[in-house]
Image 1 (cartoon, rainbow, N blue to C red):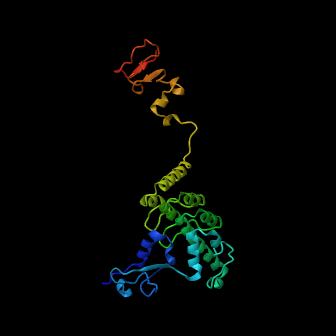
Image 2: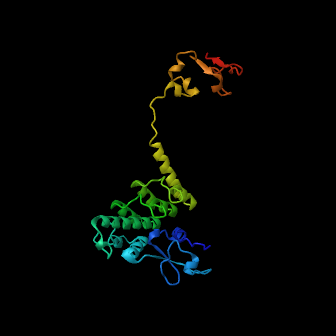
Image 3: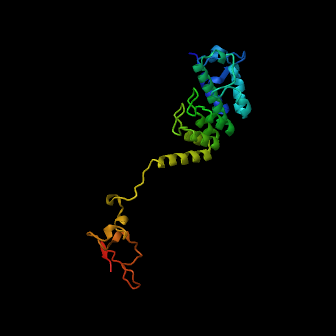
Length: 269
């Protein structure tokens, strides 16, 4: 039985370092021809200790797009078809309908956003988000810009993504959230930032009552002199013995006797 080389797995492992979107990646061996993901080592003639080359697809201007986003060149990126009305075309895009052209632009904008979030280029991230880049988009392997920013430790990019609607509980292809990835890659500052954001988001949904009902009060609140229960009812003017510290006295005078430990209640004098 032939052992598959699992090109998709190789791309995932390579992406752990370069973080480029996997559908732009091309795997090749000696002849530099693209290797299908479902082919085998034997089919491609790969020998032990052989070198597999990972490169970026050069067609449709993808190479220039990835380079500009990775290097943080915003001026160049603006000219590469990442906004709603791009003054840029390739041999592929000129044949697209208006609907497909919009999808083409959206895919390029998302790819640039994903790479910029990994590299930490805040100016590019802000520009793309303000021009409609999909903050909730994912790569074919299930990772989002928030995931890659968390794994790379870029807190400013994370704040911008969350401000534009990124979902903190969204999971990648392996079921891991951005908080999980921050912990996995040892990004303590990001981990604290995401935890605080998550806590604030949950706290914003909690309603606080201006006044508690008697049934919701604790024992020490029921017998507080500021509450009505102190002035009337069977417990009026009585202390509960288990609510008073052992060092306290049963009265306020300087010569007041100590409380009776054996009793359940002590009358106020």
